[in-house]
Image 1 (cartoon, helix red, strand yellow):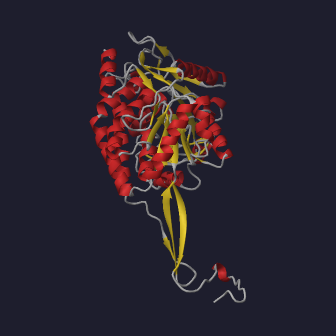
Image 2: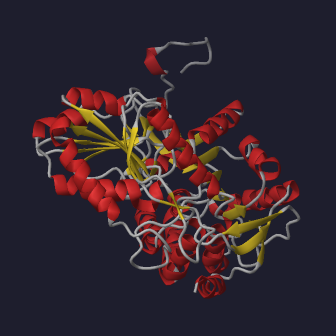
Image 3: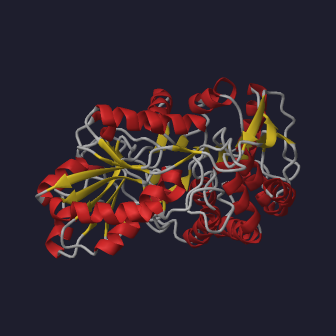
Length: 520
């Protein structure tokens, strides 16, 4: 069954058994690479899907040359015309939604509806970007000098490097690439080595649009090892902005290397997201939010719910309901419609989960449900697990870490101020939530002394953000913002302009600097 799906999807998306890992966007933009072979294995069954010949340093240099040439032309195209290009990309994504979503499921192991949902997110961000292409506006300010006009405008930044993680191999590309494109930038995309085929599929999907508008060199792809591609990308002064999504450890490396050349980095890193559940909340809603937040994508979202901070009075009731719900979760082949949780990305992720649970127990926690390896008949090579529920204390060192797996820590509180303190007392600061029917508790959570995360929700879970709002977090989450609101400003450079349309040259702040025979 899976092999037939693989063959059908690869054919629909133009992926071969062996693919090259460098492309400049167009259908003829593939570069013959000579690096090491990289095989993409499906976490569903452990079987190979297809392979990639990775790029070398010389291939990287060739792609950069095409990107520089592409930028010279693309930046002069009016922004609404660039928006039309993105609109056409959205049309192609709609046509390829089923196949691309299926490939995401095959390559990441996320369930079928989540794979389709990721492509829908690409479509939504494309639609957002089209509207944005007519709103890249600056401000007009009053000058302190007579007969002067002062304003600011925004210019394309240049080449934008995009580094993505395995868990959202397509959506995060679109957050960056499509907004950067309407801003007039060109893109250099380095995907996770665990999901290279999705990146190749994206290139194949957009190639007809690139050909139609003759914009080769705008949407570039490079797949390669750190020494050949990764480090050159980070250290390249021709790339003013690196947008990187991944672990905090990876983000620190990116930030350090990019800062050393005074480049910009936009970082969206780890989360240790919590839901505070008060004793007066709608418990059913809190339960449903917890289920998706903790179990969705097998706990492999940066916004996955890692901690439940719950009032002592309802803890046992909630825990009983939660365990009953966990017992009903169908774990298995994510290509089947009734599956709610697929595999972890690989055996290392599975081992990390088991080690984290063992460590938690040693530190004083209690495993109350799950946390075991699973063998699914016919899919024995897949890294399947039962999601874990662990009673713990917030200060345990393992609770302070982000384990990229479905481990949910249950933590008690008596006073809301203590709950907020525990909520904030972790190194990460991405997504947060409170379930309450109290306006007072809601407002405390959203106040200056409340959640310290980049995202704070009320009666909504931590996972699953809309594209209209800026996405990102504080502290070790990196401080970056992608997607909606005014995140487009990351991809442009601001310029302040002052025009003197008078016949005198007054200086700012009333300074007098006269030289005899020169001043009027």
